[in-house]
Image (tube, rainbow, N blue to C red; front, top):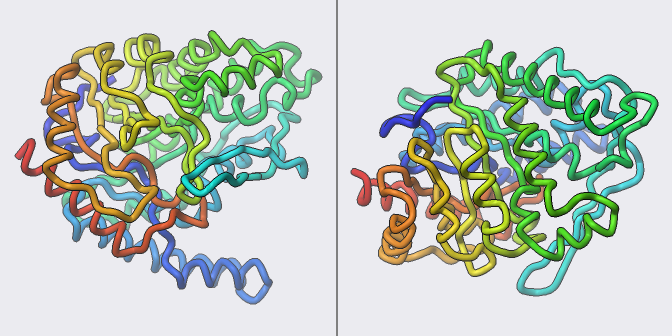
Length: 375
């Protein structure tokens, strides 16, 4: 594990990863789905869109460059369905989301573990190679992938064929080993900034989510501890020079959320035990609770405060953001803090209810405030 430096990732001004898809990319995806555009044609449109969004990130002053997750339908399921031994099944997973106007459901395709788990070649290797070639001087390419917890949280023991893994320990050993293949492989490709996105560790703060898991027969009171152990196992022996962060939020689908509650329930085990270099944390409104759980963050780890919402277009006030950074600094030294939007702008292809101009304004605000606070 490496200690973040003032100039290294996670950066003082950073962002989670996904960005709004431009209209011409959405149009190309629609043509591809209708059989009017072949895979090579779609790839060419995607390449051009990635070039544009990398330049956008440089233009607003960010040192992190992602491909906006432009080639994915969702932030996690494209990856999970690419793991050897996992099959996409017709039974959709239903995740209930809420927003100020009511509720809506996200229904990605389900999964089932039908064979030995493996990641022989890094998932998204070609996509990341393109990003590496597109980054501008002063930018660091970041790859975002779902954490191993998400495979279990989305499927649970019921999704694992007992003929393949007769007990949960065998499943977890195999899953962490597969993720080690991913980490080692993408690092060998030159990745120096890897982010494990994990909604499950944030969902578990919500008593309603824990009640749902208990009703399914899961150990809701201790599941976060298992997840932390397995993420650490996945990162064991990672190469020197690879910075790993995790992003925790309570759901992000078309400006809606799935869970509520502060980080209190998981904080001590999470911040003290998860062997990552930094935490991207959601703190954009009352759903996220206060900064008190940050008292468990040890020296040497960076907390990226997600104070700028990606769920609404209204632009935050810079002075308000600075006051909130000061409040967080009561629990974590200022030199261990950084600033970002609270989540991605487009965790799924549909995106949140903002315009491209809104997105740019929020990213520019993050950069400006970070420059004022940390220089």
